[in-house]
Structure formats: structure tokens, C-alpha cells
Length: 500
Image 1 (cartoon, rainbow, N blue to C red):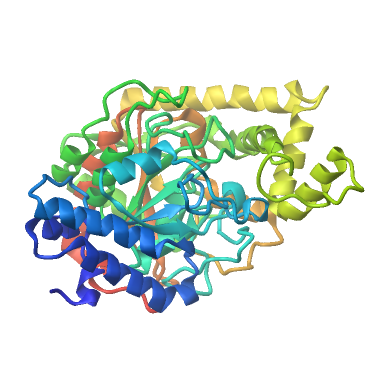
Image 2 (image 1 turned 90 degrees about the vertical axis):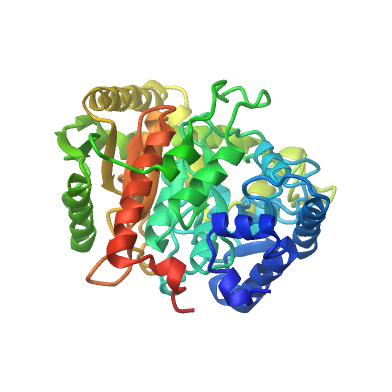
């Protein structure tokens, strides 16, 4: 039996191999991570719900399979932290909002089903910005999550609970969702790996909708290979999702095991630097570009002028779709109901419920989206934003005629202090400056650690962007960069947890 401290520092691939060989049991692994959650999550607040009994039952089932001699999948018995936006039968799903507090879904999301079918052990549901609206996980109705590197700082958003769980060694795997950068931005500021697959590559059935043309679930991990293994489990066509792509999953695991950039053309976009970028972030990015060149890549300078308009277009499209999607939370069908005492009309109950159940950021975006969609303003705002979206996609298409992948900083700065931008929505929105264009275009992107910023000793993320359904390129390049970084500087998260 390996001690619990050693177990929680294993990669997902190592954990699965030890369970398959019998060196460890799935129950031992699950208990080690549950103990870690119990020890540190009071400080971090990564989880909204820990499903202790459910996780141990899943782990026992894996051990019984192995004892019967059944073949185990590549992630069987590996624990995972699930963002609280995916429905999970019999387990609360709140989306970080009071309006769904206590709601227990009667069905599993397709992604949840695929995790269970692969014998991945779901530890519980992680904290998030309410309805995934935010860049810091400060908008959760249940309080903020701390960054394990420095608990006074944000762990990114909206999926800060998932990224914090990884960085604090409470789980080796996690699931996030990415509407404007909410997988990649938390990965960057916590020193972990996060992937936004091609839009439609991972089913959205059972994922509570924020902005349906942008939302995308994806894998979060501490290594590129672990992310690839999880990607393979959750991706694939789903007839229950009309936007699901009916095509084979790209060979992401093979790419992660054979990382190389030799002979590849790597693009650097001039719009992804300048005012507002932290000096240490740019320094680490420039070092990463030099490293790619050293590894055999050809660096190509790119000009994508429409990227400067991405933030403005996003903050019209996303709120407009959110205004439509959140109309279903009316206090009549499910979730919170306020004012239903026989003295109020149905319309008044809806108004009182939405007032009590939604937080300030959600209300802000609903109002902005409703205005942008209103008569007389639709063409001027929402219609114009969609035209900009087309221009951004065209810029990507032109870029990918010249290069295989694009690289950039993932975020303009390292993790900022909790509360620092709470009263300045525009400053908060700028955190997603580098990530939003890929959501608008629908292509794939990854963030992986590329060192610590010298001025604050906090993680910096390198973003890799690939064309639609070329997700394997992310892993091929990511694995090569990761291996080179580990050889030079080691991997701080695998060797020693940040101080808690």
C-alpha cells in the first residue's frame, strides 16, 4: 500500500496503471483524494458537493471488475472533479446559482454517462461562476474559490473550482466548460492543463446552457497526456445534441504520446500582445516561442486584425444567448420559487424568483442581452456582432493556410487578487482577451504551464490554437513543449503542491 501523500501526486496515467496492475486499489486511490479534500478544501473551497458514498461505490465496482479479470479502460478508477454545470443523476447540480440550490437532476448529462461508462470515479461537483458567467469564480452564489498557489488570489473562472482541485491535488482529473476561455484561463493561472475541444466535439446534452453557440465542455488535468486520455473518454458524436459533430475523435492520445514540433509552422499573432499584458507573462511567452524554434518549429508572424474586435462581439453574442437560455428559470417549473403564497400572480412569482435567485453578473448579462435583441437594436448590436464573428473566423482560416498551429499567452496577467476587479466588469472581461477568438470561431485550443512570472512567482499559461477537428495538433505540440519544460525546470505541480 502506497501512502496517501504519494497517491495524490501521481498522474492520472500512473494511477490507472497501478490500479490495473493491482499495485493500488481504486478504493485506496479514492480514499486518498477524499482525505485530501477533507484536509484542505475548507481553505480552498473548490467543491460545492462531495459525493463520498457515490465515489467509493464507483471505486469498489472498479476493484470488483479487476478481481473478476475484466479488462479495465485507460482511466478506470481514476478520481475526477466535475464542474457543477453537468447534470448528475441523484447528485445536486446548482451551476453556482441560488436559483438551482438543492436541485437534484433525474438524469445524467452525456458527458457524465461517458465518464461513468469509462469507470472514472466522480468525487463531486466543483465551484464555478454562476451559470459560468465570469473570469474569476468570484460570482458563485456560494462564495469564491482560492488559488492554491496563493489563496488570496483567484483560481480563474468560470471553472475555478475544477482548476483549484487539480492544483491542490484533490483530484488528478477535472472537467470544465469553455464559453469564452473558462477552461483555459483557470488552467493558466493555476499551472495546470486545460483544453477547449473543437465546438461540437464533446456533447452539450445535460450541460446547463449559458451561450449555446459558444459553450464547450472539455478536459482539465496536470499533464498533457492525462488531458488527452480524458478527452478521448468524453468526446464523440451524440445524437442527443444537434450541434454534435458526427466524425471520428482525432487521435489525441497518440499525439500526446508522440509530441513533436519538428517541421511544424507555428504562428504568432501580433494582436495577442501590447497594452495590458504583464511583463512577466510576455517574457515567459517569448521564451516559449524561442523554445519552439529550438525544438524545430518554424515561427511565422501573423496579422489577424479582427481579433481586436473579438471582446466586443463576444459581450453582445454571449449575453444575447444567455438572455434567451435563462428565460426557462421562471420559478414555475423547477428550482427556486419565491412569493408563491397565494397573493402573487404567476408573473410576480417569476419576477420575485429571478430577483432572489440570480446574482448581479447574471442580471447584468441578461439585461445586456435582452437589450441587444430588442426591436430596433437587433441589427445594430447582435447582427453586427455576428458579422464580426464571421470576420474572426475568416482571419483564422487565412492564418491556418500559413501555419499548423497558433500560440499566444493564455491570459494577459497572472492570477489577480480576490476582489481586485469585482467592481470593474470591464477589467474582469479583459482576462479573456486571448481566449475569446477561438470560441467565436469554434476551433480547438489548449493552455499549458510555461513557467512562473518573475515579478510574482505565479503560473503563466501558453495557449496553443489548432484548426477545427485538428485537436490532435494541440496535444502533439503541447506534449513536446511540456517535455522540454520538465527537462529544463521540472514540473512543480507533480513534485510539490503549492503551499496550502
